[in-house]
Image (cartoon, rainbow, N blue to C red; front, side, top):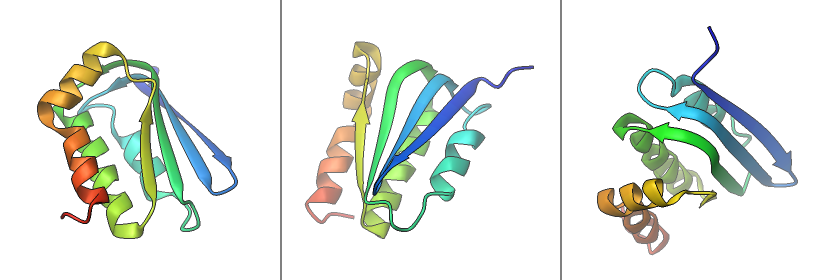
Length: 108
């Protein structure tokens, strides 16, 4: 059985791109979490590319929020790119972007 999510990791200097392809939900988030845990300490910027994402549930959104908190704790930047309109609305409703802004401004 093929995994529901494929995470393609690309490193360019101190920047790491994690391209998501498939479904990021409770049953498939382990590969994404493993890639986050394996980030090298010298990475200054993590780009999560949602271009290939077909579906995300609350558990997947929780993993994204955990990445944002991890970035705040370990002093690296997170960029979310390739977000479709549906995921954009979901992230707006849940407050993902507000959390990111708050942490950038020094909030916890």
